[in-house]
Image (cartoon, rainbow, N blue to C red; front, side, top):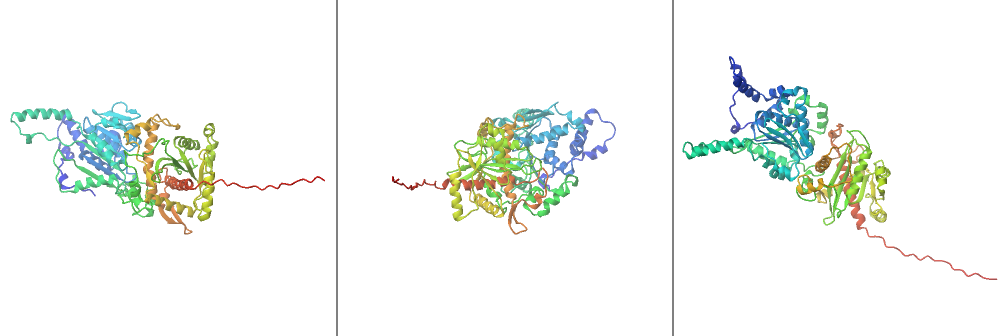
Length: 621
């Protein structure tokens, strides 16, 4: 359904009909103007003509809205090609609007670069030779800026970090993954980009000329030229939760659209919002089997409504409350942020959920680092790792980096790890550094006297100086239930917090980007440090998302289970939903519980023993 309120309704000339009525010959100028009008009204045809890419009907409608509205939000299901739509807008808008400057921004520079790369792919395709003529010869790619000039303007992909980005100005702002952008970033960093209009010199000339006419009494102030609001902000997002900023902005724009308040020409902006569910996407763009699997858990399932129905949901009814985890996330700009290197005066717990598969569709090899807050008896997630299909040596390199960069007090690993700790100890990297992690016994499932006895032994065996700091946790149905209940309790009682993003914090970001860390990733470009930071910002959101997807069920034997919805588990693609970062959070909470119990356990007093000895006197005959 498409809804346009009366205040937005305008009569548009049908240039297609006018074209049919043309007779005779046109001079060169008339031919150019006529062609431009025709191409502007038929954006889908124009796109296919110059680039070879034929947009779907819904994409053409969205592109027209992006042209005609100052503020547009595109909320779409998985597979709805949001990035492709943005890439099409990147060349269509400048072609019809000279001197326009477009900024591509997203929570991570990687995401912004993805839209830029999609644009490059379309332009450089064999069918895009006409489009190639519109651009400068090559795009400029720097570690902190991708740029391409077109029709007197530019398209720039930028990272949202550092003071220098505040100097950018743009007429069009395209924001991908809008749900991950905080309200503060949008209002204080991004919106100011749109202050300067693209035709500022032309406007100055008109104002100066009209100033003279007013002084001469030839026109009145009311007759001055009214300049339209030509700035654009285009937000692309998946649906999320109603307590997040994306929904707040969506609701605000929607209410402005349906309100009876008239638009003041030249002053107020106008708005467009859309929700594109999987049902609105052409069948050739959607894999039916994926949809069938996704909705097997029910079309009213919250995950299905968000991911495929493009609907915002409440999020407070999941076992691990998404709303509470959101409220216990440090506000962007405040500390603690996610960390690339730990504070030497702080203590950290590391959890590990290994995966040995080399397939990109496998589970993540996941790790999680939590910073202990001794004053509040809580822990804050400050670092995560999630990689699928990589070699064992890469996981060991990352493990080594974490041990050297954080003051790790305790390690807890999934007992089914295939002895990752042993493999790390035997690696040349660990042996050259004379680093050996050893294990002690801890069992949180024991109760009463057995637990007390185990705790006394764990206190005796634990040895930070000797790196005897690791214990393993086997997962039985009872263990799984207890640990999930414990994690839920920690979340509900604010024992677990989540660090703020590093990128929006200028001071912390600049300090982090200059850090020298003992990690050299294989097959990474020169900007890998920025990618590492961006990945941490992304994973702090993903760990909460994975937790919010967990459902409580029962096994065929009647045991309680905690797992992803069956509809998500059936998807075995590389981009499937996973729960490995949730598992590391579960293990980290167990490690935090164990650390507190062991540290509070009184040290055993040395017991003096009297050893009797028989003294005999020899008899000499």
